[in-house]
Amino acid sequence: MFQPNWHLREPNKVASQLSKAIQLNVPKKYAQTFGGTIIIDSNDIGRNVLGKDAEGEIRLFEDIFADNPLGQASEQTPIAIVFKQS
Image 1: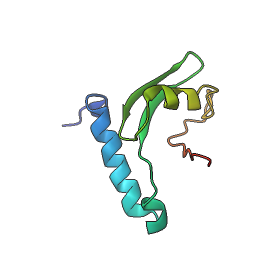
Image 2: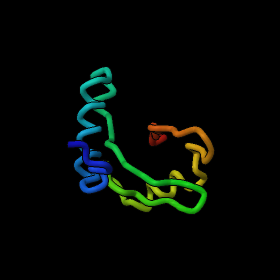
Image 3: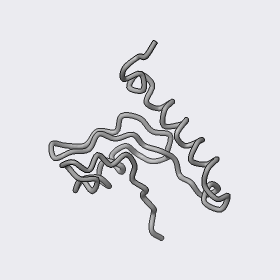
């Protein structure tokens, strides 16, 4: 039976599962440096990290998405990739 929003009950687990899938499907050199996944609700009202397996403070990830780079209209962007610049 389909359970709507099942992922909202265990968002850290979902983040971990997404990370594993990404690491298995990208070239090895990228998988080795992959920092993890965050699940975030970001919009014109605010930001809220729902789940994560990436190291770092929640506030850091909310700040990264402060200007809502995924858009607010019909974009429905499923994923963003964020890199730390040295």
